[in-house]
Length: 358
Image 1 (tube, one colour):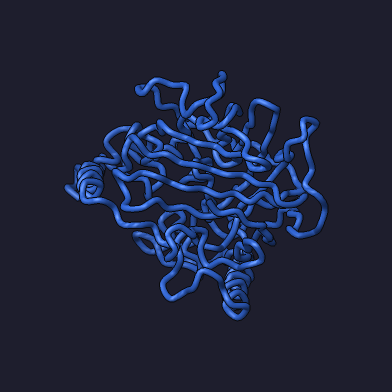
Image 2: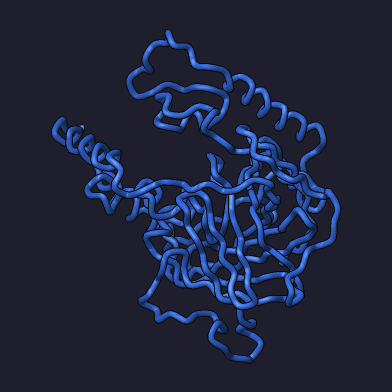
């Protein structure tokens, strides 16, 4: 398992005060002597999850300058006021801007601009290394191939979602659209940036629990802390699972324990609906296990590691590292609720397309 000191500097497009890593200072500790993980944190970054083709794991200074410079140019180009005399978007939307998020938001019809987005503008730096991807396992930084059985499962799922299947009823809509869980895998596990906005977290810690609240859709994971299931000891919070097989809660069944100064969290029994919230988990098997490791490396940085193990879905395990950097600001309520009128309009639009045989 990777263990690394992390340094990162993140400045949001819409500025939120963030304390830069490597500002010095010893690791703070709780009264019981454990590393204090509490506080407000962000994992926003422009480093992608998978490594782009043609890049090594570690970026050169020239590559960093080009990537971050391009991002800054995008921010400057799209941070001005909108032209009040601009034409309406073309039917089906238009490609706008130099950022794929702008192109994707609201179908490219102008639903968002950079005023609303807070992706970050710097690459993730881990152990002094500017990374080209968050994934480091396997070595190519890419999600491994699926097994033949998993490819078949994925094909069946995608076929069911075709022909308006994903618009048949409210329950078929994405969980984030229904304000149930966060976009992608923002709340986790694993806790990954959504490359959109609100990549912010609040951690509260006691000797026997840790709670991790995600700003995006206000999710909170409450994780009991015991001892390692391999230790031979037993206790209320110990062991790989406290739930029977048929109970699969949101965010799965998580158990935590300390290994020296690292908090290890093992999660099984993930909810099958939540697996559909993150595209890379489509068709994952019920036996998937996710291991997270949180290590506070200095006063301003938590090194977050994750490993996904599901031999029934992927040929090899895969995982990586994400720097969490301390924020100096507060988190605000993400007032998202399932009763919003957009859901009704989405379904009405699908019914209209069905009547037109589209």
